[in-house]
Length: 177
Image (tube, one colour):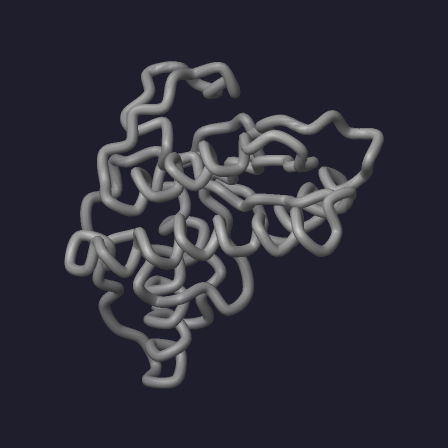
């Protein structure tokens, strides 16, 4: 996401060009196959409705979100069975430390090895709809069921949590001060 500000062209090439290539291959080789397009809640931009419904207008505010919204449009090509999954924030094992929770968990692991210390965080006032990545994967699998109508689905918990609460929970689980 943040990298798209430094290299928007690559984001367009991968997210839009790559999606169109996959859709074209499916159309040519297995047109009856269901396609799951993993989009993002970022396409909504700064929505004021929470929980955010699928009919909320898209208003992307980053190059990454723009590319995902454009790729969603490509998914509307006629003759394909496509489900768009707009996942909200998801966290779990192996989370990249470029993201807040991944950074915090790696810092805590390092601090545990060092006997304690200071956890570096930024603004903790933001609230996020967080879901375990394994639950997001289960939702994707369920969306592949042909009984589910093609369309766009949000994948979210429907609950908001402050980043301060996340830090407090992680610190409480730490084995050192």
